Length: 121
Length: 110
Picture 1 (cartoon, rainbow over the protein chains, first blue to last red):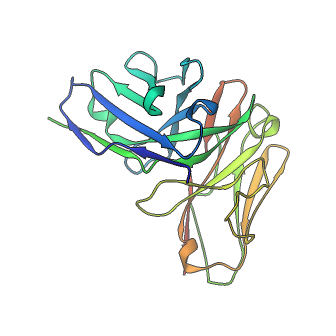
Picture 2 (cartoon, chains in turn orange, blue; picture 1 turned 120 degrees about the vertical axis):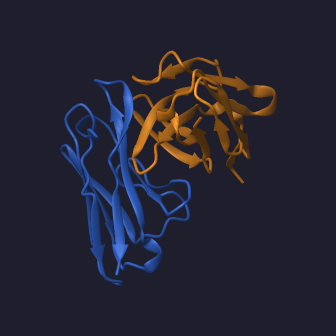
């Protein structure tokens, strides 16, 4: 079946970096973009952006430029989220989700289970 | 503060109907489709409604969505205890060039 499997929880110190993976299965990986969504403790969801899995072009939402990098390894149907110079406020659950729809009419139909990133000294 | 406004919490008894609202503006809900997700405690979000009113395969027809102008609603009829969850609306905002989420509504089934 169609699923996105994310890597396990991470505990990092401030200033370090982290790389979260999202492995797709059950469909053609390069047919659908992958979104990244952040949910801080007790907060709602924030869209971080997406990566076009066909071209590799990323698009970052406001507030997620500079320290956040989306990448791919299409040979293993996997998308990655890398966060550099981690701060305490990056502590959150990070989800990947498959993008559906077309220009201006998007939604997310399959979600990974999430990866908890904790930043603490 | 989310751009899409939802009531923070609602409660209803089993068997009843509940309506969750999502209010936006002309640059988002008024100009795009709305989707709704359900998030059970400790789990990933699950798509319930897309394109304002369509249900993915496997979602019970107790869940229905609609949109009018710059607002959308999710109706849940015949409430069951397993419907106790957080519900989020989402849509594309053409001014921001971003997908937006509502703040979420925590539904308690008493």
